[in-house]
Image (cartoon, rainbow, N blue to C red; front, side, top):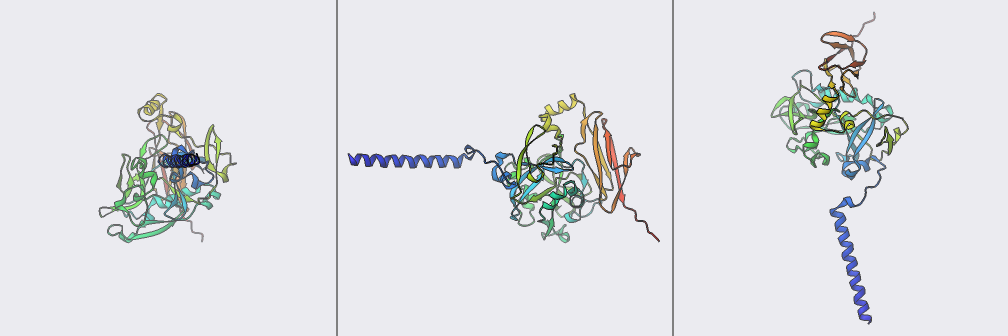
Amino acid sequence: MELKMKIKRILIFIFLILGLSSMIMLLIKQPNLIPPKAPKTLKDLAYDSDKRLGYTIYIPENGKLEPYLVLTKNYYKQGNVLLIRKYVLEVPLPHNKKNASSYYAGGIPDRFISEVFINEFPSKLRAQIVETSVNIRAEDVVQVGDKVEKIKRKLFLLLEKELGLAYFATSDEQEIKYFTDERYDRAIARTKDNTARVWWLRGARDHGFSNLARSVTDYVGIGASAVKDSYYLRPSFCLAPSTKIVKERIDGQYLYVLKDFQNANLSRVPLLAEDIGLTGQALEKNYEEHLYCSLKIEIENPEYGSVLSDSLTVHYGDVSQLRAVTYPNSQFDGWYLRERLISRDRNLNYEVLNGDTLTAKFSKKETVLIE
């Protein structure tokens, strides 16, 4: 009798072990069976921590909340969390005004996001942004050679290897899982009206041409573009992994925001296509039915300034809010419609009609000598 009980206990123990092992294997193969933990820090929200949380944080930008993707919890093995703007800036810029070098640290995109766009963030956030050491191709080997230069930036563009194009790597960069999980498709960036846009990377040269810089195309690929061509910017930056976040109800939606700005009473920026909830032909049909139209902005002398806007696509006859922004040594000369000056104010509320193109003119600030 005792032997039978002993055998029975052994069998029960074996079944328990097998059952527990099966459960562990199932959880390893199907991790989604475990519900995600509520994130408390930015590191928790990163794509490579738990992508089920949506990896999106809303960052204060010009007094509104702009969506940023939380890509990785340890960028460049420097221990900080990498964020990238979900949508490109609305107005494109050239890499260089002239058909010259594609050296990143000497280009317009680097200077614009580092000296001008960074001021869109509140001072408290600017102080928290980590100065990150990133690789670029050295200036003296932009045309021939693979020498790497390290620069420190608070804001920067990504490199092609990080998006999955390894054979044009410069040094020890790592692929970012967010992009390589859906290679190239996720590299496509858009404006808020869901239009795919070509955007600049910080990679230099292509096949020995010093005047070609790396860019992400609007047809699922990474290519090279002439530096004098105007394309879009998608700024990135790093914050400490311990940065606290909270989930707040804002404009009827629950959004993750930085805890430091929890009580700032900021509204979410309008996200045209997201708010409509359509894509593809259905979205285009909606635009036609509701008479949406887009304003085009051209920049004269982009080495001295550019234009920022929440969206250039609005209902026919509605207003698009435009802001001319300059470098410290530059000045804004006015808004022009077909060479006719319409305003010298930096801020312009413009009634958009179909096919309108505005030119924002900038120049070097004049210095007056006092005798």
